[in-house]
Length: 349
Image 1 (cartoon, rainbow, N blue to C red):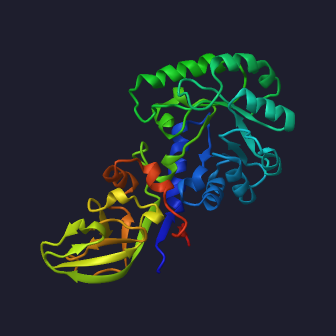
Image 2: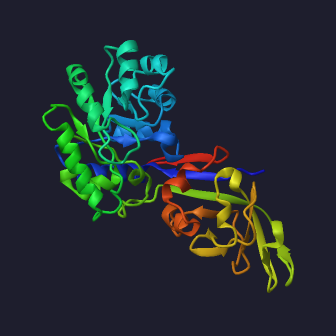
Image 3: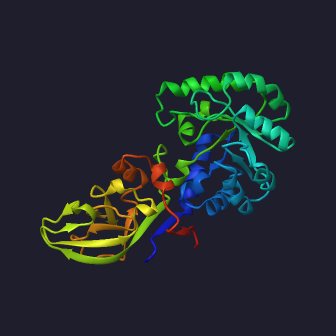
């Protein structure tokens, strides 16, 4: 079967990081979140590219992700592990020179017992109730933690995508209350927090989805294009059906193109019969169910059927597709599977 291709525009990636860096302000460093294989786009190449653009701090979800990108970064790049120091992480953290963000008293104990002289960060729970030390645990642990000079104190905003949400100001005030006077570098904002303004920026910002072309950074350049090869075309007569379950029935003579991708590649089955593939700026409605490896689309109105049809493109970005699927752009990107051939383009290549 021909391979579908995921094309990643590294110039757009750098432009998005540069724009978010400028919004973060001159006194604030801008990191890059490259967890989940850089949201499905390939963490090794993305991290290398952003390092060359000026990023020196990176965030991953788990230690194994950090270990995978460490060989592609210079020694001065700091890689924070958001899940912290999990049981069994000792050797990976040590060997890959990773910085765990400690989230609990258990993790603090584990860090001090196994890596007493290694750098670490601390996450505070300012109201999201997901990860981080709550106020009581922070008060108990702060003297010992601060004595070891943490690399970072951070928290995470729950509602930054909604600028007027009262939770933003509530968490900001709590972060100040818990961290003012510590003398440690602080970080509160991912992409949405950057857009809330300088009160939320502190010493380090951590853009993620905005780097890859997604909301809430509406000015972001699109980074990913997903092109699916056409395997076969056929004529379907009025009254005939297409795909599993007879979900779609032709009302006219219809030319159907079958492309090589499906829900095994992270294309949501919910897109069946309600979304479009694209030939340039011409929509080609999906007809019938998205199956494991194949999608069928109506190309009747095209003068010529191209070799590929696009699912993610200029005409239908990740957020537009997410709106159709009833989800968010993050899920569209991170679901993109390993069977896509990933191509990277940048100026001069």
